[in-house]
Amino acid sequence: MPEGTRKKRGRAVLTAAGLLLTAVALFYLVHTFSRSAARAGGAGNLFSFDPLLFAFSLAMLMMHLMAAAWSWQLVCRRAGSQITYRQAFNVHFLAQVGKYIPGKVWGAVGKVGLSKTVGMSNLQTGHALVLEALLILSGCLIVSIPVVPLAASEIGLGTPTGIAVVLAAAMVVIFTAHPGAFKKVTAIARRLTGRTLDFEDTGFSSVIRLLPLYVLVFLLQGVAFVLLARSFGLALPWIPGAFLMPTAVGVGFLVLLSPGGLGVREVSLVWLIGLVMPGTDPGLPTLVSLAALVWVTLGEAIAFVIALISWGWRKAFRALDELRQKRDPS
Image (cartoon, rainbow, N blue to C red; front, side, top):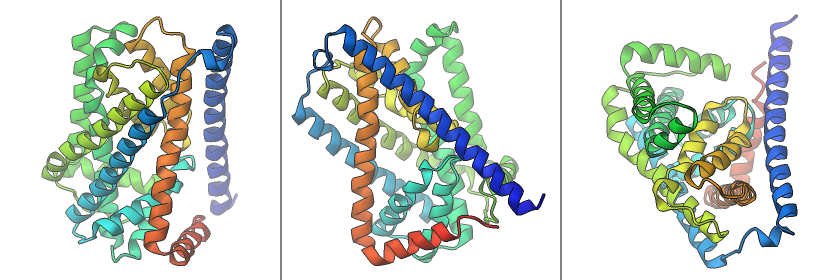
């Protein structure tokens, strides 16, 4: 079988598996909510909606997205590019559509292609992408620590053991920036993308200096989620409630088959809310989890449109179309 055909079939299987996983997870959530709504005598009896709180949650979510674009600008500068915030915002959110393709690689491929149009080399973009991945993983792990005692108890681990496991995992991710381990990470990244991407050592100090920013980005997201939950009548406490969404995002990020973490992230949220608020009817946490899916999509859609306008409609669509045509390296 030709190499190109084998790659196409492999990508097709990966896509089908990712879509199936997402469909099963979302079906489970919708089914759970439907059963709870039926027991309550109607969906309207499960929640009360506060539009003002929802508006505040959306505003906080946009602050989180703006901070995420800033973090991309800083990792690009660490890689040697003098990219502006506007350019970073445009590239980051125009490339976001790629993360919803199973495999977690097309968002990265999109950033490589779009970054060329703002003067970044493959070397600089590859450097920034690997550094970003390390920071996302380590940031999620650190922010999840307040949730660990509850999760550890649920799965039968002691709290000290659970915290030790998470801290160890975070340290492993952080120390991946060490030159010796970094070479192996870049080799894996090349195999996952299926393309020849250039990388250089990010430097351990780069990870340490930028890590607090990524923790802040995730905390903004967590606070926004608590506001969202309360807008639907779920009295989620600020602590550890503000750490639930980042933890769920981290789980979704690690499940490579799930496009954008869809389904996996939402099921994780329902489980985490149940840990924080035991005894709560699963219908309301499930509703909040599904609402969070729409809420995140809405926020990213707003950012995408802003990036389109900022970039220029015709120029942006032309760049995205060129990336689409180059998606198959064969």
